Amino acid sequence: MFSGGKSQSLSLRRLMLLALVVTCSSLLPAQRTPAANRSLQELVTKAERIVHGHVVRVQLEPHPQFTNLKTVLVSMSIEETLKGDDRKSLQFRQFVWDIREQIRGGPYRKGEELLLMLNPASQYGLTSPSGWSRDGSAFCAIAKVRQ
Image (cartoon, rainbow, N blue to C red):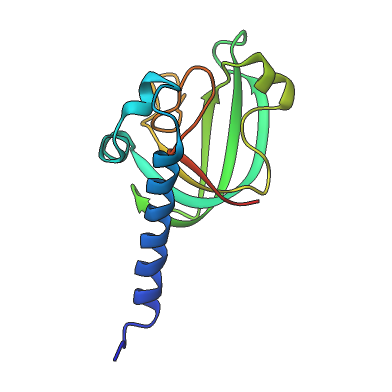
C-alpha cells in the first residue's frame, strides 16, 4: 500500500520533529519571557535556517573584533535541514549573556542532539536561536531531542 520507502520515512521524521517543537512550545509558561508569546509560525518565519543535528564542538571565547564580549562558537554535524541551505556541518557564534553560562562554558554541550531554529547572523557574525531571550532561556527554538 505504501511504496514511498525512504521519502515517507523522511516525511514522518520531519513531522515528528515538528510535533516535538509544537509540544515544546506548549509546555512553557507564557509569562517566562516576552519572546515566549511568539507563535510557532513567527519563530519559523524569523529563523534563517532550521536544522537537526549534533553538537560536535563548543568553544567559549572572546568575539574576534570585540574581545570584551564573551561568545560561544558552536560546531554542529547536520543530519537534516528543514529550512535554509542544505549542508553537512554548521558553525555559528552566539553572545553569552549569562555569567552562569560563561562559567559552564556556554548553553550548548558536545554530543547534544538538537533541532535548532537560527536567526540570521548580525553584521558582527553573531546569531542566536529564534525566540532566544536575554536570560539565556530557550524554548521551542532549541529542542533537545536526546541526551
